[in-house]
Amino acid sequence: MLTAVLRYDGAQTSAATTRRNLADPRQGLQPTADRYHDAVTTAAPLHLGPDWVTALDAAGERALPGLSAAAGYPTLRAHLALLSLDGHHPVETLHAAIGARDLDSALDTAAVLDGRLDPAGDHPSRPGPLPWLPAVPQQLRD
Image (cartoon, rainbow, N blue to C red):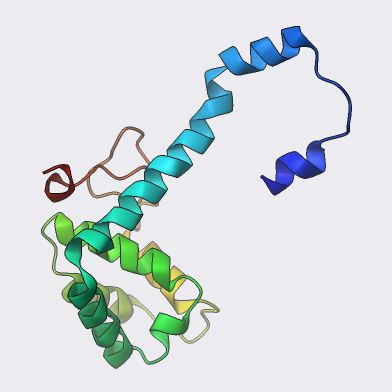
């Protein structure tokens, strides 16, 4: 959104350009993908419930003090929730990511750990509507 604001030069857009932009699927794909990803990653921890979130947060703090205060922790938690709904044990998965390599030089340990959960870089264990988006777990579908 900020990029669009900064790119705006105040010039009027013609009706033909507006029409062409509205017909271009690339114009709507990114915002739609962002909304989809936000919905799935928000729904997963909500579905698992506050007790699950509290238990995961406590386990994370025991494993790596200060983890839940890291900027990337909400993303890590949502990723672990999706993995949990896909049948993976979130605490074991977190411990494996912590033990994989040194974290001493990490500026945001949660972001590094989130990346370790998905070494291929395309995040989902089961791809969703686009290869880099997670599928909606069956429990959320139900």
